[in-house]
Length: 393
Length: 109
Image (cartoon, rainbow over the protein chains, first blue to last red):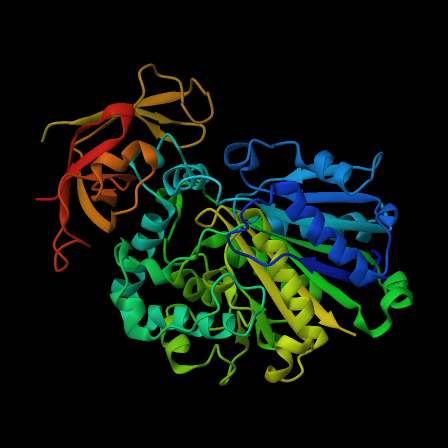
Protein backbone atom coordinates (compact mmCIF):
# COMPACT_ATOMS: atom_id res chain seq x y z
CA UNK A 1 0.00 0.00 0.00
CA UNK A 2 1.46 3.30 -1.02
CA UNK A 3 0.69 6.98 -0.80
CA UNK A 4 0.04 9.38 -3.67
CA UNK A 5 3.75 10.33 -3.68
CA UNK A 6 4.70 6.63 -4.04
CA UNK A 7 6.11 6.44 -0.51
CA UNK A 8 4.84 3.65 1.70
CA UNK A 9 1.64 4.04 3.73
CA UNK A 10 2.52 3.93 7.43
CA UNK A 11 0.44 3.20 10.51
CA UNK A 12 0.82 3.20 14.26
CA UNK A 13 0.46 -0.33 15.52
CA UNK A 14 1.24 -0.03 19.22
CA UNK A 15 1.44 2.60 21.95
CA UNK A 16 2.57 2.52 25.56
CA UNK A 17 3.58 4.81 28.40
CA UNK A 18 4.20 5.19 32.09
CA UNK A 19 2.15 7.35 34.37
CA UNK A 20 3.55 10.89 34.43
CA UNK A 21 4.56 12.30 37.80
CA UNK A 22 7.21 11.91 40.45
CA UNK A 23 8.45 8.32 40.13
CA UNK A 24 10.70 8.01 43.12
CA UNK A 25 13.35 5.32 42.76
CA UNK A 26 12.70 4.64 39.07
CA UNK A 27 15.60 5.60 36.81
CA UNK A 28 15.53 6.84 33.25
CA UNK A 29 16.03 3.50 31.50
CA UNK A 30 13.38 1.57 33.50
CA UNK A 31 10.88 4.32 32.62
CA UNK A 32 11.73 4.02 28.92
CA UNK A 33 11.72 0.22 28.96
CA UNK A 34 8.36 0.09 30.73
CA UNK A 35 6.73 2.31 28.08
CA UNK A 36 8.42 0.36 25.27
CA UNK A 37 7.23 -3.00 26.62
CA UNK A 38 3.66 -1.69 26.91
CA UNK A 39 3.79 -0.63 23.28
CA UNK A 40 5.16 -4.04 22.22
CA UNK A 41 2.32 -5.82 24.05
CA UNK A 42 -0.19 -3.41 22.48
CA UNK A 43 1.16 -4.26 19.02
CA UNK A 44 1.57 -7.99 19.69
CA UNK A 45 5.26 -7.78 18.78
CA UNK A 46 8.51 -9.02 20.30
CA UNK A 47 11.35 -6.54 20.82
CA UNK A 48 13.39 -8.35 18.15
CA UNK A 49 10.87 -7.14 15.55
CA UNK A 50 12.14 -3.57 16.00
CA UNK A 51 14.57 -2.62 13.25
CA UNK A 52 15.31 0.92 14.43
CA UNK A 53 14.85 2.83 17.70
CA UNK A 54 14.62 6.60 18.09
CA UNK A 55 14.83 7.92 21.65
CA UNK A 56 13.60 11.46 22.29
CA UNK A 57 15.36 12.95 25.30
CA UNK A 58 16.32 16.52 26.10
CA UNK A 59 18.88 16.61 28.88
CA UNK A 60 19.50 13.18 30.36
CA UNK A 61 23.16 13.97 30.87
CA UNK A 62 22.35 16.87 33.21
CA UNK A 63 19.30 15.46 34.97
CA UNK A 64 20.41 11.82 35.33
CA UNK A 65 24.00 11.52 34.08
CA UNK A 66 22.94 9.29 31.17
CA UNK A 67 23.46 10.67 27.67
CA UNK A 68 23.92 7.68 25.33
CA UNK A 69 20.27 6.75 25.53
CA UNK A 70 19.73 5.23 22.07
CA UNK A 71 22.02 2.27 22.66
CA UNK A 72 21.39 2.15 26.42
CA UNK A 73 17.64 1.69 26.06
CA UNK A 74 18.07 -0.72 23.14
CA UNK A 75 20.42 -2.75 25.41
CA UNK A 76 17.86 -2.78 28.21
CA UNK A 77 15.20 -3.97 25.76
CA UNK A 78 17.54 -6.81 24.79
CA UNK A 79 18.16 -5.55 21.27
CA UNK A 80 21.58 -5.14 19.69
CA UNK A 81 22.79 -4.43 16.21
CA UNK A 82 20.00 -2.15 15.01
CA UNK A 83 20.26 1.64 14.63
CA UNK A 84 19.41 3.21 18.01
CA UNK A 85 19.56 6.98 18.03
CA UNK A 86 18.91 9.65 20.61
CA UNK A 87 17.12 12.70 19.22
CA UNK A 88 17.24 16.13 20.82
CA UNK A 89 15.00 19.07 19.97
CA UNK A 90 14.39 20.48 23.45
CA UNK A 91 10.69 20.01 24.31
CA UNK A 92 10.09 18.69 20.78
CA UNK A 93 12.53 15.77 21.20
CA UNK A 94 9.62 13.32 21.45
CA UNK A 95 7.90 14.68 18.33
CA UNK A 96 11.17 14.40 16.41
CA UNK A 97 11.58 10.77 17.49
CA UNK A 98 8.07 9.86 16.31
CA UNK A 99 8.61 11.54 12.94
CA UNK A 100 12.02 9.86 12.51
CA UNK A 101 10.39 6.45 13.06
CA UNK A 102 7.62 7.32 10.59
CA UNK A 103 10.11 8.48 7.92
CA UNK A 104 12.26 5.35 8.37
CA UNK A 105 9.28 3.18 7.48
CA UNK A 106 7.72 5.52 4.93
CA UNK A 107 10.93 5.74 2.88
CA UNK A 108 11.66 2.04 3.10
CA UNK A 109 14.71 1.97 5.38
CA UNK A 110 13.00 -0.46 7.76
CA UNK A 111 9.60 -2.10 8.11
CA UNK A 112 9.10 -1.56 11.84
CA UNK A 113 10.51 1.17 14.08
CA UNK A 114 9.93 2.40 17.59
CA UNK A 115 9.95 5.94 18.94
CA UNK A 116 10.46 6.32 22.66
CA UNK A 117 10.36 9.60 24.56
CA UNK A 118 11.70 9.82 28.09
CA UNK A 119 12.77 12.32 30.75
CA UNK A 120 13.64 11.81 34.41
CA UNK A 121 13.35 15.24 36.02
CA UNK A 122 12.47 14.96 39.69
CA UNK A 123 15.79 13.70 41.05
CA UNK A 124 17.25 17.23 40.81
CA UNK A 125 16.38 20.44 42.66
CA UNK A 126 14.06 22.95 40.95
CA UNK A 127 17.07 25.30 40.51
CA UNK A 128 19.11 22.68 38.63
CA UNK A 129 16.09 21.64 36.56
CA UNK A 130 15.21 25.26 35.70
CA UNK A 131 18.80 25.85 34.60
CA UNK A 132 18.81 22.65 32.52
CA UNK A 133 15.56 23.69 30.81
CA UNK A 134 17.03 27.13 30.11
CA UNK A 135 19.69 25.40 27.98
CA UNK A 136 17.04 25.32 25.21
CA UNK A 137 17.43 29.10 24.85
CA UNK A 138 20.13 31.29 23.31
CA UNK A 139 22.71 31.25 26.11
CA UNK A 140 24.97 34.08 25.00
CA UNK A 141 22.27 36.55 24.06
CA UNK A 142 19.27 35.83 26.27
CA UNK A 143 19.65 33.26 29.01
CA UNK A 144 22.85 34.96 30.24
CA UNK A 145 20.60 37.88 31.28
CA UNK A 146 18.64 35.56 33.60
CA UNK A 147 15.74 34.80 31.26
CA UNK A 148 13.83 31.57 31.92
CA UNK A 149 11.25 29.82 29.76
CA UNK A 150 8.36 30.91 32.00
CA UNK A 151 9.58 34.52 31.62
CA UNK A 152 9.93 34.24 27.81
CA UNK A 153 6.34 33.00 27.66
CA UNK A 154 5.36 35.63 30.23
CA UNK A 155 6.59 38.23 27.75
CA UNK A 156 4.68 36.52 24.95
CA UNK A 157 1.53 36.50 27.09
CA UNK A 158 1.86 40.18 27.95
CA UNK A 159 2.41 41.07 24.26
CA UNK A 160 -0.60 38.95 23.19
CA UNK A 161 -2.77 40.67 25.79
CA UNK A 162 -1.64 44.14 24.68
CA UNK A 163 -1.97 43.44 20.97
CA UNK A 164 -5.21 41.46 20.81
CA UNK A 165 -6.98 42.36 24.05
CA UNK A 166 -6.56 38.82 25.35
CA UNK A 167 -7.52 38.78 29.03
CA UNK A 168 -6.02 37.09 32.08
CA UNK A 169 -9.30 35.13 32.41
CA UNK A 170 -9.11 33.85 28.83
CA UNK A 171 -5.55 32.62 29.38
CA UNK A 172 -6.53 30.95 32.66
CA UNK A 173 -9.41 29.21 30.86
CA UNK A 174 -6.79 27.02 29.12
CA UNK A 175 -5.61 25.65 32.47
CA UNK A 176 -9.19 25.14 33.70
CA UNK A 177 -10.11 23.14 30.57
CA UNK A 178 -6.95 21.04 30.55
CA UNK A 179 -7.11 20.25 34.26
CA UNK A 180 -10.72 19.17 33.76
CA UNK A 181 -9.67 16.76 31.00
CA UNK A 182 -6.62 15.63 32.95
CA UNK A 183 -8.88 14.59 35.82
CA UNK A 184 -10.24 11.93 33.42
CA UNK A 185 -6.78 10.65 32.48
CA UNK A 186 -5.49 7.92 34.82
CA UNK A 187 -1.90 8.55 33.64
CA UNK A 188 -1.93 12.33 34.26
CA UNK A 189 0.35 13.94 36.84
CA UNK A 190 -2.48 16.24 38.05
CA UNK A 191 -5.91 14.66 38.30
CA UNK A 192 -7.76 17.45 40.06
CA UNK A 193 -9.85 20.19 38.47
CA UNK A 194 -9.11 23.84 39.19
CA UNK A 195 -11.32 26.93 38.97
CA UNK A 196 -10.59 30.13 37.10
CA UNK A 197 -9.93 32.21 40.22
CA UNK A 198 -7.54 29.56 41.57
CA UNK A 199 -5.42 29.96 38.42
CA UNK A 200 -5.48 33.75 38.57
CA UNK A 201 -4.69 33.81 42.28
CA UNK A 202 -1.99 31.11 42.27
CA UNK A 203 1.60 32.02 43.10
CA UNK A 204 3.25 34.29 40.50
CA UNK A 205 6.09 32.56 38.59
CA UNK A 206 6.87 34.90 35.67
CA UNK A 207 4.31 37.69 35.43
CA UNK A 208 1.68 37.58 34.13
CA UNK A 209 2.02 33.77 34.34
CA UNK A 210 1.31 32.00 37.61
CA UNK A 211 1.87 28.54 38.98
CA UNK A 212 -1.32 27.08 37.48
CA UNK A 213 -0.36 28.50 34.07
CA UNK A 214 2.70 26.21 34.14
CA UNK A 215 3.08 22.44 33.76
CA UNK A 216 4.47 20.33 36.60
CA UNK A 217 8.00 18.89 36.58
CA UNK A 218 7.41 15.22 35.86
CA UNK A 219 9.13 11.92 35.20
CA UNK A 220 7.72 9.80 32.42
CA UNK A 221 8.10 7.87 29.20
CA UNK A 222 5.97 7.08 26.16
CA UNK A 223 6.48 4.80 23.16
CA UNK A 224 5.00 4.42 19.69
CA UNK A 225 5.58 1.58 17.21
CA UNK A 226 5.16 2.30 13.51
CA UNK A 227 5.10 -0.14 10.64
CA UNK A 228 3.73 -0.36 7.13
CA UNK A 229 -0.05 0.00 6.90
CA UNK A 230 -0.21 -3.45 5.36
CA UNK A 231 1.61 -5.07 8.26
CA UNK A 232 -0.33 -3.00 10.81
CA UNK A 233 -3.65 -4.28 9.46
CA UNK A 234 -2.36 -7.87 9.75
CA UNK A 235 -1.19 -7.30 13.32
CA UNK A 236 -3.95 -5.28 14.91
CA UNK A 237 -6.61 -4.95 12.20
CA UNK A 238 -8.90 -1.97 12.83
CA UNK A 239 -6.88 -0.77 15.84
CA UNK A 240 -4.23 0.47 13.39
CA UNK A 241 -4.14 4.25 13.09
CA UNK A 242 -2.85 5.70 9.80
CA UNK A 243 -0.22 8.37 9.60
CA UNK A 244 -1.92 10.85 7.26
CA UNK A 245 0.89 13.42 7.16
CA UNK A 246 3.81 15.01 8.94
CA UNK A 247 5.40 18.44 8.98
CA UNK A 248 8.45 19.80 10.73
CA UNK A 249 10.19 23.17 10.92
CA UNK A 250 12.88 25.04 12.80
CA UNK A 251 12.79 28.66 13.91
CA UNK A 252 14.78 31.21 15.89
CA UNK A 253 16.24 30.03 19.21
CA UNK A 254 16.36 33.59 20.55
CA UNK A 255 12.98 35.20 21.23
CA UNK A 256 14.44 38.53 20.10
CA UNK A 257 14.95 37.00 16.62
CA UNK A 258 11.24 36.13 16.24
CA UNK A 259 9.63 38.46 13.71
CA UNK A 260 6.49 38.55 15.84
CA UNK A 261 6.56 37.04 19.33
CA UNK A 262 2.79 36.56 19.35
CA UNK A 263 2.82 34.57 16.08
CA UNK A 264 5.77 32.16 16.01
CA UNK A 265 6.66 31.01 12.52
CA UNK A 266 7.94 27.43 12.90
CA UNK A 267 4.68 25.99 14.31
CA UNK A 268 2.74 27.60 11.46
CA UNK A 269 5.19 26.25 8.85
CA UNK A 270 5.13 22.73 10.36
CA UNK A 271 1.32 22.74 10.34
CA UNK A 272 1.10 23.90 6.73
CA UNK A 273 3.52 21.16 5.66
CA UNK A 274 1.58 18.52 7.58
CA UNK A 275 -1.77 19.62 6.16
CA UNK A 276 -0.32 19.60 2.62
CA UNK A 277 1.25 16.16 3.18
CA UNK A 278 -2.08 14.77 4.44
CA UNK A 279 -4.29 16.59 1.93
CA UNK A 280 -6.32 17.89 4.88
CA UNK A 281 -6.92 21.27 6.47
CA UNK A 282 -7.36 22.70 9.95
CA UNK A 283 -11.14 22.45 9.62
CA UNK A 284 -10.87 18.65 9.24
CA UNK A 285 -9.25 18.18 12.66
CA UNK A 286 -11.59 16.72 15.28
CA UNK A 287 -9.07 16.03 18.06
CA UNK A 288 -5.94 18.08 18.60
CA UNK A 289 -3.11 17.51 21.07
CA UNK A 290 -1.12 20.76 21.30
CA UNK A 291 1.99 21.89 23.12
CA UNK A 292 0.56 23.82 26.09
CA UNK A 293 3.92 24.26 27.83
CA UNK A 294 2.17 27.25 29.42
CA UNK A 295 -1.49 28.28 29.27
CA UNK A 296 -0.64 31.05 26.76
CA UNK A 297 1.10 28.45 24.55
CA UNK A 298 -2.20 26.74 23.76
CA UNK A 299 -3.64 30.06 22.62
CA UNK A 300 -0.61 30.57 20.32
CA UNK A 301 -0.93 26.94 19.17
CA UNK A 302 -4.54 27.03 18.03
CA UNK A 303 -3.80 30.25 16.13
CA UNK A 304 -0.65 28.78 14.51
CA UNK A 305 -2.51 25.60 13.53
CA UNK A 306 -5.21 27.68 11.81
CA UNK A 307 -7.94 26.40 14.13
CA UNK A 308 -8.84 30.00 14.98
CA UNK A 309 -7.79 33.29 13.31
CA UNK A 310 -4.81 35.25 14.67
CA UNK A 311 -5.53 36.90 17.96
CA UNK A 312 -8.73 34.96 18.65
CA UNK A 313 -7.25 32.11 20.67
CA UNK A 314 -8.19 33.62 24.02
CA UNK A 315 -11.80 34.34 23.13
CA UNK A 316 -12.18 30.90 21.51
CA UNK A 317 -10.86 29.10 24.58
CA UNK A 318 -13.01 31.06 27.02
CA UNK A 319 -16.13 30.42 24.90
CA UNK A 320 -15.66 26.64 24.90
CA UNK A 321 -14.82 26.44 21.17
CA UNK A 322 -11.75 24.30 21.94
CA UNK A 323 -13.78 22.08 24.26
CA UNK A 324 -15.67 20.76 21.25
CA UNK A 325 -18.34 23.52 21.29
CA UNK A 326 -18.01 24.45 17.64
CA UNK A 327 -14.35 23.52 17.29
CA UNK A 328 -12.12 20.49 17.80
CA UNK A 329 -11.37 18.97 21.19
CA UNK A 330 -8.05 20.47 22.21
CA UNK A 331 -5.87 18.54 24.65
CA UNK A 332 -8.46 15.99 25.67
CA UNK A 333 -5.59 14.13 27.40
CA UNK A 334 -5.15 17.03 29.82
CA UNK A 335 -2.22 18.43 27.87
CA UNK A 336 1.15 19.26 29.34
CA UNK A 337 -0.51 21.43 31.99
CA UNK A 338 -2.32 18.52 33.56
CA UNK A 339 -0.78 15.33 32.22
CA UNK A 340 2.71 16.63 32.94
CA UNK A 341 5.73 17.61 30.86
CA UNK A 342 8.63 15.15 31.12
CA UNK A 343 10.40 17.05 28.34
CA UNK A 344 11.64 14.28 26.02
CA UNK A 345 8.50 12.18 26.54
CA UNK A 346 5.98 14.91 25.79
CA UNK A 347 5.83 14.75 21.99
CA UNK A 348 5.72 10.95 21.99
CA UNK A 349 3.00 10.97 24.62
CA UNK A 350 0.87 13.37 22.57
CA UNK A 351 0.84 10.80 19.75
CA UNK A 352 0.10 7.99 22.22
CA UNK A 353 -2.92 9.88 23.59
CA UNK A 354 -4.13 10.83 20.11
CA UNK A 355 -3.99 7.18 19.03
CA UNK A 356 -5.99 6.16 22.12
CA UNK A 357 -8.56 8.88 21.44
CA UNK A 358 -8.97 7.86 17.79
CA UNK A 359 -9.27 4.21 18.79
CA UNK A 360 -12.04 5.21 21.21
CA UNK A 361 -10.36 3.68 24.25
CA UNK A 362 -12.20 3.80 27.58
CA UNK A 363 -10.91 7.15 28.82
CA UNK A 364 -12.02 8.90 25.64
CA UNK A 365 -15.41 7.25 25.05
CA UNK A 366 -17.31 10.09 26.72
CA UNK A 367 -16.15 12.43 23.94
CA UNK A 368 -17.78 10.33 21.19
CA UNK A 369 -16.07 8.92 18.10
CA UNK A 370 -13.43 10.87 16.17
CA UNK A 371 -11.55 9.78 13.09
CA UNK A 372 -8.90 12.42 12.43
CA UNK A 373 -6.63 14.58 14.54
CA UNK A 374 -3.15 16.00 15.01
CA UNK A 375 -0.37 16.26 17.56
CA UNK A 376 1.70 19.44 17.67
CA UNK A 377 4.95 19.48 19.66
CA UNK A 378 7.21 22.53 20.11
CA UNK A 379 10.79 22.97 21.31
CA UNK A 380 12.09 26.21 22.80
CA UNK A 381 10.03 29.31 22.09
CA UNK A 382 9.23 28.32 18.51
CA UNK A 383 12.69 26.93 17.72
CA UNK A 384 11.44 23.44 16.74
CA UNK A 385 7.98 22.32 15.71
CA UNK A 386 6.51 19.00 14.63
CA UNK A 387 2.94 18.34 13.51
CA UNK A 388 1.76 14.76 12.98
CA UNK A 389 -1.69 14.06 11.53
CA UNK A 390 -3.33 10.71 12.22
CA UNK A 391 -6.47 9.14 10.79
CA UNK A 392 -8.36 6.07 11.94
CA UNK A 393 -9.10 3.43 9.35
CA UNK B 1 23.33 61.64 21.28
CA UNK B 2 26.22 59.49 22.46
CA UNK B 3 26.75 55.93 21.33
CA UNK B 4 26.52 54.05 24.60
CA UNK B 5 26.14 50.64 23.06
CA UNK B 6 28.94 49.54 20.77
CA UNK B 7 29.90 46.18 19.30
CA UNK B 8 29.86 44.40 15.97
CA UNK B 9 27.18 43.52 13.45
CA UNK B 10 27.88 40.52 11.26
CA UNK B 11 27.42 41.15 7.57
CA UNK B 12 27.02 37.42 6.94
CA UNK B 13 24.39 36.39 9.52
CA UNK B 14 23.13 39.70 10.90
CA UNK B 15 23.98 38.99 14.52
CA UNK B 16 24.89 41.93 16.73
CA UNK B 17 27.48 40.97 19.33
CA UNK B 18 29.22 42.87 22.05
CA UNK B 19 32.18 40.55 22.65
CA UNK B 20 35.76 41.79 22.33
CA UNK B 21 37.26 41.30 18.89
CA UNK B 22 35.60 41.80 15.55
CA UNK B 23 34.70 38.22 14.58
CA UNK B 24 31.02 37.22 14.75
CA UNK B 25 30.29 35.31 17.94
CA UNK B 26 27.45 33.52 16.15
CA UNK B 27 28.86 32.25 12.87
CA UNK B 28 32.56 33.05 13.14
CA UNK B 29 32.62 35.31 10.11
CA UNK B 30 35.22 38.07 10.07
CA UNK B 31 32.96 40.06 7.76
CA UNK B 32 31.62 42.35 10.48
CA UNK B 33 31.03 46.07 10.72
CA UNK B 34 31.25 48.18 13.85
CA UNK B 35 27.87 48.62 15.55
CA UNK B 36 27.22 51.77 17.53
CA UNK B 37 23.91 52.87 18.94
CA UNK B 38 22.56 55.31 21.50
CA UNK B 39 21.03 52.32 23.31
CA UNK B 40 17.65 54.07 23.41
CA UNK B 41 14.54 52.20 22.46
CA UNK B 42 11.15 51.00 23.58
CA UNK B 43 10.00 48.06 25.64
CA UNK B 44 8.17 45.46 23.51
CA UNK B 45 7.31 43.24 26.46
CA UNK B 46 8.56 42.27 29.90
CA UNK B 47 8.18 39.71 32.66
CA UNK B 48 9.34 39.21 36.21
CA UNK B 49 11.49 36.17 36.95
CA UNK B 50 10.40 34.91 40.37
CA UNK B 51 11.71 31.35 40.01
CA UNK B 52 15.25 31.81 38.74
CA UNK B 53 17.93 29.42 37.46
CA UNK B 54 20.36 28.48 40.21
CA UNK B 55 23.04 31.01 39.25
CA UNK B 56 20.53 33.91 39.38
CA UNK B 57 18.62 32.72 42.46
CA UNK B 58 20.06 35.39 44.77
CA UNK B 59 18.82 38.17 42.50
CA UNK B 60 15.18 37.06 42.14
CA UNK B 61 12.71 38.63 41.68
CA UNK B 62 14.05 40.61 38.72
CA UNK B 63 12.55 41.92 35.49
CA UNK B 64 13.62 41.02 31.97
CA UNK B 65 12.52 42.86 28.88
CA UNK B 66 12.51 42.62 25.11
CA UNK B 67 13.77 45.93 23.78
CA UNK B 68 13.49 47.39 20.30
CA UNK B 69 16.24 49.94 19.78
CA UNK B 70 15.38 53.07 17.82
CA UNK B 71 17.51 51.73 14.94
CA UNK B 72 15.34 48.58 14.76
CA UNK B 73 17.64 46.06 16.45
CA UNK B 74 15.93 43.82 19.06
CA UNK B 75 17.72 42.80 22.23
CA UNK B 76 16.76 40.98 25.40
CA UNK B 77 18.15 42.17 28.71
CA UNK B 78 17.48 42.70 32.34
CA UNK B 79 15.60 45.79 33.49
CA UNK B 80 17.06 47.84 36.29
CA UNK B 81 13.72 48.02 38.07
CA UNK B 82 10.40 46.22 37.80
CA UNK B 83 7.96 48.30 35.71
CA UNK B 84 4.57 49.20 37.13
CA UNK B 85 1.68 47.25 35.59
CA UNK B 86 0.35 50.36 33.83
CA UNK B 87 3.67 51.35 32.23
CA UNK B 88 5.70 48.67 30.53
CA UNK B 89 4.92 47.93 26.90
CA UNK B 90 5.82 50.89 24.67
CA UNK B 91 7.63 52.78 27.39
CA UNK B 92 11.09 54.24 26.68
CA UNK B 93 14.16 52.29 27.80
CA UNK B 94 17.87 53.03 27.66
CA UNK B 95 20.91 50.79 27.75
CA UNK B 96 22.65 51.28 31.08
CA UNK B 97 25.63 48.91 31.17
CA UNK B 98 26.94 45.42 30.52
CA UNK B 99 26.55 43.00 33.40
CA UNK B 100 28.80 40.12 34.35
CA UNK B 101 28.82 37.56 31.52
CA UNK B 102 28.14 40.24 28.90
CA UNK B 103 24.39 40.51 29.35
CA UNK B 104 22.60 43.84 28.90
CA UNK B 105 21.03 46.00 31.62
CA UNK B 106 18.42 48.58 30.63
CA UNK B 107 16.90 51.39 32.65
CA UNK B 108 13.17 51.92 32.30
CA UNK B 109 12.81 55.63 32.94
